[in-house]
Length: 39
Image (cartoon, rainbow, N blue to C red; front, side, top):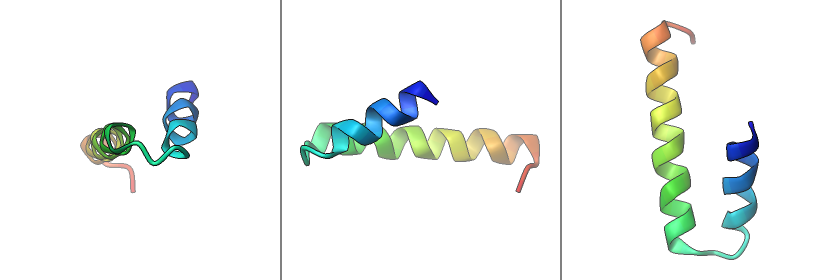
């Protein structure tokens, strides 16, 4: 949860790198959830 908050806070400065990191992180989390079969 700390990492998620950290990334969201960094998005406030409209930094493209931080936004890309958040997108990749979100995709990874979704894939992990799908692997577990949780909806």
